[in-house]
Length: 464
Image (cartoon, rainbow, N blue to C red; front, side, top):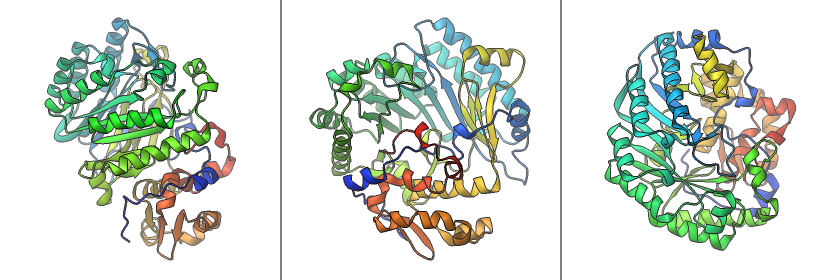
């Protein structure tokens, strides 16, 4: 069944009707379902079973750098605000220990097709610390020549020589945090960042051989409105990034302490947020960007857009990706990895992280071993989130089920979405229609067995 991925209809009434709290499905089951019974021995068991059945998957690596120079009030990431590089030097040393322990337990090839440094602010590291980190990685793993090696960058703390160094170290993709260029919005969230310094970093990346630059924006921030965000979009489109992400700001001050510094009275209303999002979609599609899914856009020739057209798009903890079959090894506090039919997450504080590594134990906080039902539902959610459609017959063959019997409750629940024009269900396909694509998270949630069991949807951000 051919799908035109560029088709997207934004219907505010439908968005209001189906906009619920829900996961982003960078994993299924989601991280809040992991259990502490999955520990260091359990993870090492699966690291040592990677080639069972004769399959040696390539590797994706994620390294979490938690340090930031200053706090952005909207941020809910696991971060440590400091200017002390003694702390990052110590952290790099312990990352080396964790990398060595995981590598020693690893069965099969150590070929890496994807590396991502996230945070926090990875570019908090000094040039020497960055060099040392890459040395630690390459002493245990082989970074393949045509891999995707990406890093999140704060343009306020990066100059041209640093970008050149990142290029020399092998990075070829960059994610640049912008959020909003409006001065009043920047002041309200404590992130003062000029267009000029952002442009300098993007131009330096292109001059240093980076294949792709993406820009992150956030809608729903304090003091935002349609007119001011239109100016930001104008400036971002002029920068011509290869990819764009437009995230919904989730105001959860009970869970994220920095958000308590944001004045709720200054937040845009729900209607204003919808107008801002509608404007962003129109401006970006008019500028030639392709809607990838959820909150991601890319130029038509970008690898994400190509992978989607070819049915190769995947979704993992870094968002949309082109590497579907890689095992993900994760390093650092709070980092989440995926090996075989398992997920695991590291402890969240430096003290716990250092203590466990001092004892020679991997700093695993919790994880999960997926059941056959989990694997089936994960595949369905992936298909909907990445391709906006799924072949019923292919799932029946792959998982030895009668789809309509197995998912009778889910299909009954989806009748409302069919009647509203969000999806179409035939004997062979479930397809997300153009009106449903902005609400694909809500559609995927129907197949979430854990949500069905407890209906505790308040822990998640709104879909839109």
